[in-house]
Figure 1 (cartoon, rainbow, N blue to C red):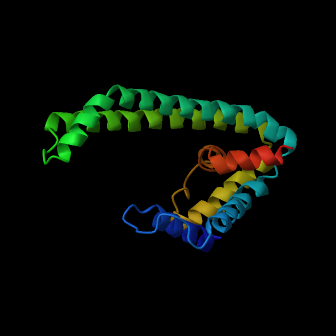
Figure 2: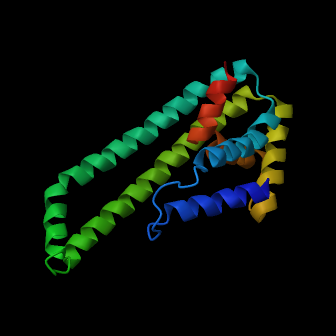
Figure 3: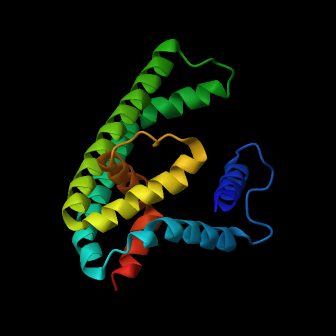
Length: 192
């Protein structure tokens, strides 16, 4: 599975690299790679053996978390829209050979730093919300299965969670696997 995961990372990095000439999927491999990513995710989520009822209890919290992420994205978009005239002006000047001013660059850097900090806050709040719901909903055997998944999959890759507590591993599992789009989609399908 590590090989599949590494291959997926390399492929997505290659496909998303802005300096590449190829901008589409000429070999039509994206659907296959998506399936492999879903298989990899299934290898991590299915060993927990969540019941449909448990998933249905967890899904509303995930949906709230997703709403929080969308609200942050909207806030960022609104802030950028407020600067659109200035951005357009500096962009046009750049194509006339004018170097963007330090003030403008500092303003944009500060804005994106603020975005990054706010995203960390949203991510932390979301992972805590999901952690609490998972801790309440999963039984002890399932919690041990989560620890096993984190130990097996993630420690195999980088030993990052080797010394983590069971609660930290449960929080990491939720934030890393369940809150993502693929994880959410998989749980929705499994809940039916």
